[in-house]
Length: 508
Ligand SMILES: Cc1cc2nc3c(=O)[nH]c(=O)nc-3n(C[C@H](O)[C@H](O)[C@H](O)COP(=O)(O)OP(=O)(O)OC[C@H]3O[C@@H](n4cnc5c(N)ncnc54)[C@H](O)[C@@H]3O)c2cc1C
Image (tube, rainbow, N blue to C red; front, side):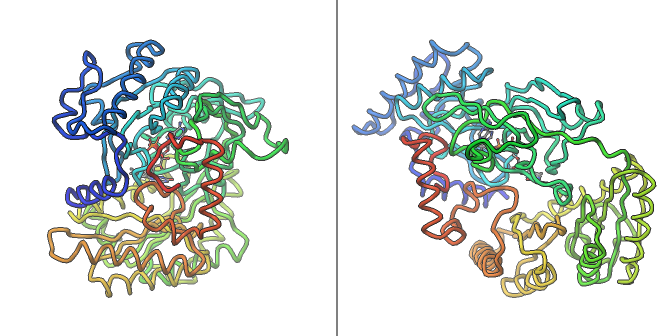
């Protein structure tokens, strides 16, 4: 794990020149709230100019922000250097604004002096999206974490961007309301981060991804203007769909300072079956049969043999011994219809001769059975191998082929490949498992990822369904988006951030 981290870090710094030239340990160590920014270690003319700009920014920020909104101590800089991927690079300073106006002020000052600003939510991203690869300012919205309104008449919630996703869900459910997008990281990640990455999760099969719940946004633009886009209405066709343009924009176009989110009535009942098979074929065919019969489950998740073997080691669940694939099917709605529909779904699944079917009825039992699914990621970590988790998506019809391809990938490159995830969406987490202590494995892993992404794109799939491009997928961005598409991205970026200060060094 450590080795990959180092490698990725050097990649990030190699291809993205840091804004400042003083990111050495020595220089960082002398940063303190008492001192202005450190002088450059290598005081060439350019570095001096850069530091002069930073010093101006710092003195203006000191006047504009409250003392606890600005941090320069080494521990805070380090804590804002990375996310849950393998790259890290410290910013020169961290700002923790508490209001949209303070966010706007930081941007106005940064824009004036052309200093990079990297937005950050909870730092639970999986692609290095909030890594400040060019130094400058890390702007964390973690302190803007109030749920401002949950309105059962309008079916909306108004939130600050730092609200943790699960907190909004719990608060909404207490009022009989439902905010469906459920990334597995929901206990830790922020709604602002979810919006910036267009996060998804198991329930998105039936309910859609974060994008589908964003009715309105307040956004601080790169030059410090605050704009309100969209509305609190569930339908709106006034002008371009501008608020949605910021969804999935990975902090490159503006900083979300408030969001108005759609809520649904909370489905009163849930039921889940967990079904074991002796082949992924049986699982994939069950899935096809469920859709063909007109069912749209709330979630439809799949896991392969490697994943289940690892889960068996961790959980000691006898059912998993020798089980080659597993499907989780959840239905929700009114109790009578859920029970009746689940019986029909079970019949469809039984036709594929499963090795076991576990049933869970009602919220508590369902959550307990999902507990097994949530063990998968940890089980793979228990193997001691580095898990390169790629959140690819294939057109649904390619699912069986994807699993066959994963077996070939494993054989060709001599590395285990574990697949599990949101089968209903065709969004499978393909985990290339690497022991970096073995000579040659680094090159093998790179080649395996290359082959994986090329095949996915050849099928008309996409290289990321939920996590985003960030730094992790940046090498494959030119493959995934042709020159016209990349040009369009650049044009949008230029229009909104002409000085390129927002999250520089990423894919646009
Ligand atoms: C164990 C684990 C499981 C995960 N499971 C899932 C999953 O099931 N589904 C899924 O979709 N993802 C998943 N993720 C990935 C991750 O949690 C999501 O991408 C999440 O949305 C990140 O939110 P965050 O607050 O941590 O954002 P950060 O990591 O802080 O930032 C992510 C990106 O958003 C930008 N950003 C953050 N806040 C703002 C803002 N207010 N305005 C503008 N830009 C902003 C940042 O610049 C960065 O580019 C998982 C991650 C982990 C570690």
